[in-house]
Image (tube, rainbow, N blue to C red; front, side, top):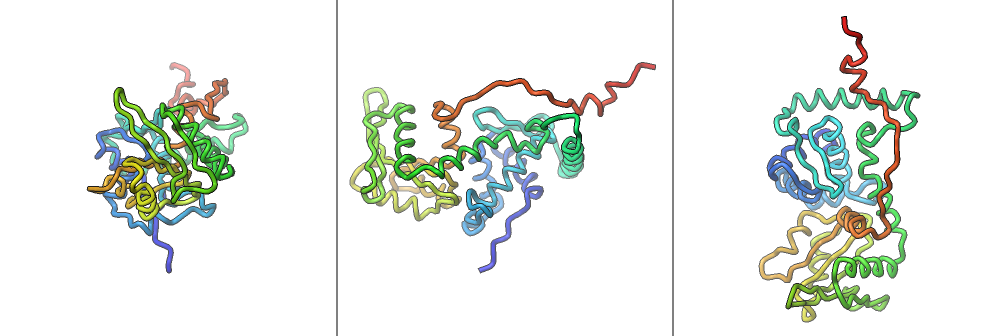
Length: 289
């Protein structure tokens, strides 16, 4: 079967910008992805195409570079929480202007990389790669964990998030259930069952349905945690009418939750010398005449 065609990252740039505009100007990575899938009608086969290393879907990988180039030209920006938003420029940017600015941005990147005056470009000067590189490294580490350790990490995460009586079933398993915890809201509480998928690629709708089947007769709420991603169809499955709800946590969100609860992730602030290209390009060094 031939490999489904996937748009290149520069083709996704305008689509990503349009999706962000449709979403009101700000959105998470997952929300942008969902909007693009809706707008472009990417098939489940396209979403299931993996990168060469098998760690993520090709669409997600190329969308990552589309976002970093949009950030590089000043059209979008992101917060530490992983929320992307339009800048004033991004709100009015045209396709032709985006094309011109992207070329100028890439030319600047090439110049910086060749320069011997700076030891290493900052994230925004190197395609934004370092802006999210910690998540890639963290996912690699999570993939290297044993199944037991990954389940224990999920247990710890739920505990930090406020769940009580969190238990892990263990190697024997329980029909697809890896563990459960109790979530409390004021005077009410209810059990939540969870399943861990240490995947390199995408999780399909069938996996979500199987997990829901394993929950039958036990509880009405589930949590599916993976190091990979979910296809569009899998993301629609949890909210299907008449079916018990299942919350989905993909690798991107899992990294953010580990950062939020400081589980194996911490933020260090250190000084870095950076060449200010705008200073030299805008004529700031010219002497008054």
